[in-house]
Length: 166
Length: 166
DNA sequence: TTGCGTGCAAATCTTTTGCAGAATG
DNA sequence: CATTCTGCAAAAGATTTGCACGCAA
Image (tube, rainbow over all chains, first blue to last red; front, side, top):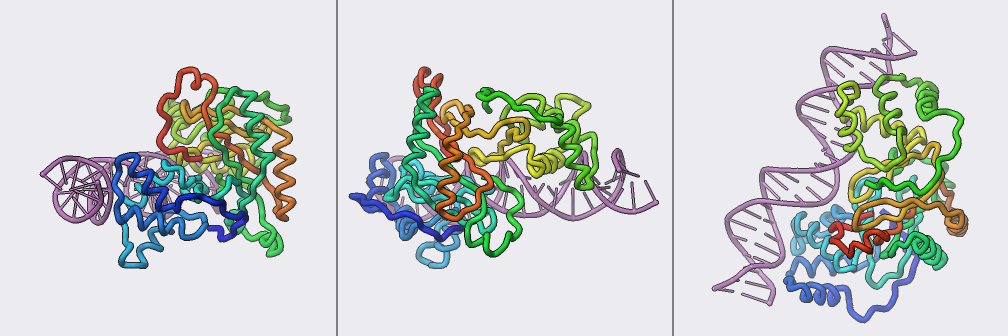
């Protein structure tokens, strides 16, 4: 998974933890240890991750050993809360921050599987224009540009993953 | 899955079947009944489909009963041949024609799950500009705009599918 | 105290794979 | 005739679910 960050984070008034607590309470859901450990862990640093990576990291520490089921359930809640975005890459669900982080899209390298972020206002303008033509009410979008990143071009085309699924 | 077509098909010199045969032969692969029945069926009409829909359709006819495994294997070959494109929507792999059909992107309605196609040259220009800035060599892209389509807006927001996964 | 949440294991769902027999070149 | 393909069933990988018990409110 990518370790490249292309963008600066943006200012938010509540910490991710506070924001999640607010969300849970507004829905009559409980503020549990597991949920708190998960938000903390997830927003500790900005990177793309999947459920397995999260489980692997958390289970290193005896204190934060959380079951698979709970992790999947909590990830869904964070998506509902609008704090995470999910996309699927090669059949696997990948998450990224959607709280305290600006709208952006990705360049996906087929060779090393890294994700490079970029932001484009023009894209949003274009998107809205297309939607308007179709009487479509936009709630979001996802653009993934696939190809080979600069470092991999130098390394000379290494075999890419078999299925170029996005 | 969507039944809406937004674009006109484009002229191609070989029929999908001929094109696939050419591909198979160029790779020393065999032209089997199953493969031929599949290309025929798939290119019979332009729509988005997944492996299950294909299996369901084909097994209605005793003559074209093809095993799941062969269907998956052939879909991969058609993708390799550049005749189909795959994307994943809500965790399921969905295919569409990439032969005899122009480059395009989609509006995806969260309410009725339909896919509406649109083509935009500007988008390609924008894509190439972004990639150039990053020294990225583009091989393709996928843009999915999510929201609510015009018909669904009228029907008044019906509950959307739980996971807005793209 | 009253449920909601968690962990566990089993169940699902989708796609992949090993292998023996069938079909193609 | 030599292989490649296919079908079957089992395997694999990811995510979901039922249920009994524990914990938050």
